[in-house]
Each structure stands twice: as structure tokens, then as C-alpha cells.
Length: 187
Image (cartoon, rainbow, N blue to C red; front, side, top):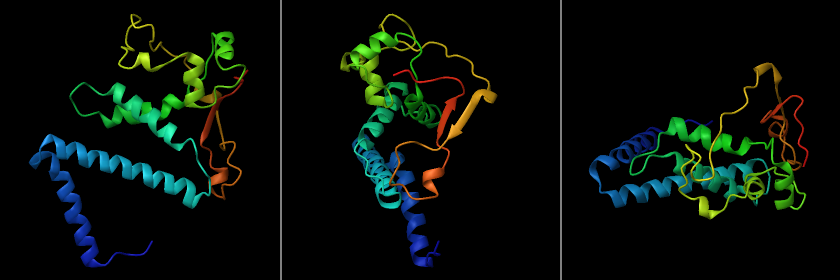
């Protein structure tokens, strides 16, 4: 990586300090505006990473971004800032859900298709916009999170992602897919 000249480095430090000070010196509107700008900049950079560096054309990128944002919003306390250490891992892990019961109903909803993606999984689970703001901590809303199955680390395996045919090395072979040994995806 090329080193930055002193004036550019000083400018970046000043810009970082100015951004960090915005919540303390600005009104709510400007804080939300800058937050949205930074979130969308993150989205643009991640899309650049996918398309520019890996060569992978991603039509589902916005959907994954939206699912993660929706998860982060649901886990955030009302009228307060989100706890990054709670919401970020949850937004990533929501993508890793695999159905283990009710498969017949899910297959009917998906017309026999798989659930290998957040949109397909949501459709299979019958989750619609009517579940927005549902309380997931109890069963009264009809949608809740149950305790998971404890899986020993020795049963977890990793492999490269599938379907990344146009992705160059070393990204093609990176172990970004985690599976439980012996579990199979039936649909």
C-alpha cells in the first residue's frame, strides 16, 4: 500500500475528528443524514469489492444488505443507538439459518425450491411485512426465536463458497462457508 503524504494524512485525521464530533455539536437531522451517507458509502464500497476486485456480478447484494439492516434495526432499542457488538454479528448470522422442521410446508411455499438465501428463507418461513416490529422474545406475535441446537465445534466444517465461478483466486478458495457435518439440505 502506498504511503500517504503528510498533508493528506493530516486532512484525513481532521475529517475523522470532525465526523466523530458531529453527534455532539449537531442536531438530530444532520446526525441521521451523515449516518445514512456513511451507511450507503459502506454499501457502495462493498459492492465495489464484489464487482471490482472479485469480478462477481451481484444482483442480490442489495437484498443481503437490506436483510442485515432490517435485522440490525429490529435488535436496536427504540430511540437509541444500536449496539454494534450485538447487531453486527446477528445481522451476519441471520443468513446462516437452516430449517430443521416444517419442511413440507416450506417446500409448498417455495414450490419445491431451496432456502439458500435470505429472501428464499423468508418466503419459505412465511414471513411477510406484517411481522415488522414483531416482538421476537415471546410467542404472542406468532414469530419468535427459540433456543438453538448446541453443535460441538468438532462437527463444524468450513469450505469455499459455492456459485462464485467468476471469482479470481485467492478469493475463490477462501473458507467463507460453514456447515455442520452430517446435516444435509433436503430442498
